Length: 365
Image (tube, one colour):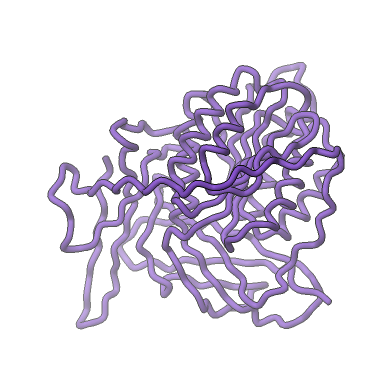
């Protein structure tokens, strides 16, 4: 169990330090080993100075969240074989929201930073951060699950990983589920009933080829029905695309427009001489989809690491800073605007890494 780090320094009456938490606790009663990323999978724990509980390790356990309210069963729409036409998704609202993840040199989550330690530029022009949040706000999440034939030996571990991912949810979160093989299928529309999603995951049977790009396109269309401002996709796949109708360029543009963080779990096999170009290029494709959205891809070398990695992604989604600003650029040209977030932490801390979305398309007439 990692101990919390408490930094509190004062000069006169002005605090220049703050509480930095990089704590990752055990999950339930089972100790979590470091995964391939060097990161324990337990949740961060925020400890207030002066109220550290008298428990082994000094970490108070979180009470179990109340069960989610029951939701009506929603029959998934019949798949017609036609993929949706997604309109351009641009920032036609004044407030731009930027989720930010801060990690330490051991790739542990760092929480407890205040607004004053962040600056944000748009196209190299400083912007005023008008809203700031680091709370576990509800989130709309789409799960994109590879059910192609090559997943046959990974399907059960992937199902188990989803169970662990859902354990990090809070009762207000909502989820939908899409699987993909020869074509994507919407198996479960938005619901807060996790049991419904898990039941659909349990029914998935691997077969066919891999239409990953079509599945991401369909997922971003479904995300237009989300009720929360914070949105994310989780993709679980073992390789590149070999059966989509949409091109990589088509989907990359929609990803950059959609204001949806994308996380990927890549279950890649070791390269071999007879691998197809799609399989060889799979990791690069996944990285492009995730990094441009402010998310990331976690590469799995050992299938037994799947559950811990899914848990870590769930924890990261719910321990982010969200910076909001109103752009000083009032033009309506619809052009790409580059975002750069910088962190200026108090002295005495190790180097910290900031991950955030890289930009967005501005409004247009």
